[in-house]
Image (cartoon, rainbow, N blue to C red; front, side, top):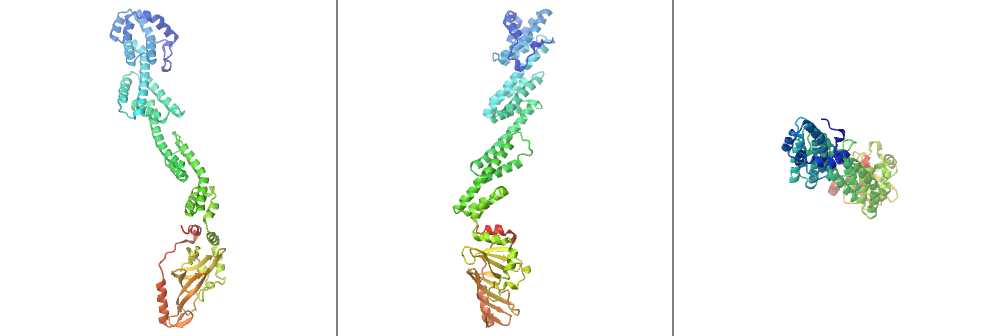
Length: 500
């Protein structure tokens, strides 16, 4: 028999008893309870109720069936209001369903389904709260919930109603989390309990599974974000920026991020980037002013790498650079023009080192060296050609000064060096000279030259033995000291990094 429209109840309205039902149970039911059939239904005695029902006339049976909807509505509301245990309610509804095998199951199906659905939602809530505390599928409470959930769910003739209610319940948790009304630990508990309890393939299971995945990544991202935040809180902004950049590049593969953490990492990264601009510039300046030039330069180098043209570090860099550094860098900005002018400037070393005899096009330098010959704190700058000829410059406190073009053989004890004369008479084929650097100029201490037959030492003709003796003495003076150098193309970094 088709139920009346006012008998149709949804889970959300089960707590509201329609006026007709109220009147029925306040006025009619007390009189009907004298009828042993409904007493048997209330006690869940299906056998007795069915026996009594079978003795009624068809007309009275019809009237009983008409009241079964009211009976189901009332008893389900009693259960929802906490006045009736589910197990007792289940027996009552099953007893009513068995009054008439052909007609009553259809009448009671809706109420049995609603009662089962509400109980399944309640079990899910209990299991989720237990998981929140224990994070364990095998606690006594959770296992009891799992067994009971399966028993009820898989005994239902039609589980669609339960699936709909479970879907609405788990979706409400997702909505609450998105609205900020559910903490992540609670969200995770609902998600994991749902994936364990719900039937695979249902919408409720799919939502819970998505939530579980989301909760997992939120946990991972939160740990990473905490680590990045720790860098920020410790004023380690470079490390924070780098950490966030790695996270943004490797953890998020698209612009869509349901966890919201991509935006959090980006916000933290942007904040660290902006805060670091002034923080690091001030820190570098402070270190330099306190005497820690190296520490300041390290920060400035990193700033140039991270910020590029976004931050002008030139003023603070200037604090780290000695006057000679700036002078050398400026000179090297147009080094070729300077060399061409210097070789004809009249700067000569002794009798046999005349730069004007050299064709610059044949002797263009490609390496740059810095070496402090006179230990005055200002290194000389040497520009080396392919055959080890050196254009040597110094800084006199105001200007870059050309000191000569020498064919360096070896360093000796400062402030000296050994060289081969570059402009000997045509008949001379070999020679050595010991040079000393002082007062921004080279002086020939002693030398010898030879054509293989005659020998000249310090301007005088000598025997081969005397020249050989000097030669051997020069050889003994040579050192294996290493001088750092770089390509002439890298002159700026090379000059500014001197002493580091």
